[in-house]
Amino acid sequence: MYLLIVYDVDVNRVNKVNKFLKMYLHWRQNSVFEGEVSISQFKKLKSGLKDITNEDKDSILIYNLKDRKNFKLEVIGIEKNPIELIL
Image (cartoon, rainbow, N blue to C red; front, side, top):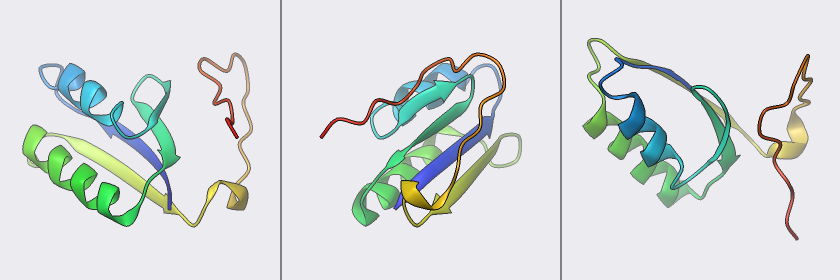
């Protein structure tokens, strides 16, 4: 599955969330990550995020896509961190 994750968390947890998500996904820009994960990685990712964040104060949006081929990305302005496909 291909994930797009957008988060808005308390400043005290931003670095923890960022560091945690880098273990699974590609950083795209501030508070945005994306990438391919397995089902078991997805479960670990969600569990880890729940451990780090405060569900009463933080917001994390997880867009679960079938794969990268089923969406089109359009960038207006600078693409801060393009994803290179490595085969």
